[in-house]
Length: 371
Image (cartoon, rainbow, N blue to C red; front, side, top):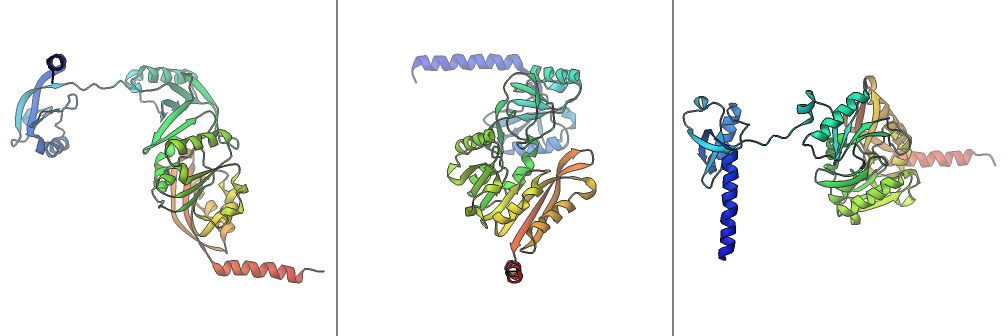
């Protein structure tokens, strides 16, 4: 190392030491070898003894864990006074408002749902003033509506409605004004995605910008993603590219009901995430289903009849050609007072005698038809 580089390194180290000395405090700490650090930290945490206001310090050989009450520390641990830094606690909207507001994060967009205009702007101002990384604050101005499932938004701060949302390691670019996307459903999407195996044939019947389709393709499935909204199709294609799944994800722009006969009897798995309207597409789902197929069927239902309408609708569309087995039924989230967004995971298994009876029925009609 040349002298100038060595001097520069020393100067930088001195500056860092000076900053540390200014910010550090001499407080009681438990000193343990680094090899025993995690075990010791767990024991102290279980007893509520760790001082969370200060940072844990690490040297080459030891870990210094700040404690709130040195007299309560078990005798087997060594107590020393050591200089540690205070935690840089970020300012939250709750710190500013005095109450904890409800909001969702979508990339660098914060979404709130507040009917009181004055309170909505108060919350937006606090979010902008806080340490949350945010460019835009939006307030829901309408319910989801129309064939593209979009809604109106009130922009409370910022201007940009396009963002990049990250979910379980995948990046989704979207414009919330022109497409449907709910960050609340991330856990539910992950539940379904992790069921998919490599080489499965999957059709996402209402794909949006790809939060189901993209991760499933990344798992090695052969995915067909149908979407009616032109704007969502553009983002879906972009997200397939930026997540490197172009070769495993076939994007189809248009109504899933118009899918070609190429996909008849094709799918091992169908995603039907279109609450309120999915039942209208069950005949198409049955046409697309292979000999054995799992349908993930989403619906909105009253708490008194959460699952029965969906199960009956699936049976009506699929029987007698398929045997129906409901593998999972659960409420995904509360949707409205006494109403829930639910999911049915239903396995369809082809009954060959059912198909045979259908053929016999057709021939019977032709046989008795008057000439």
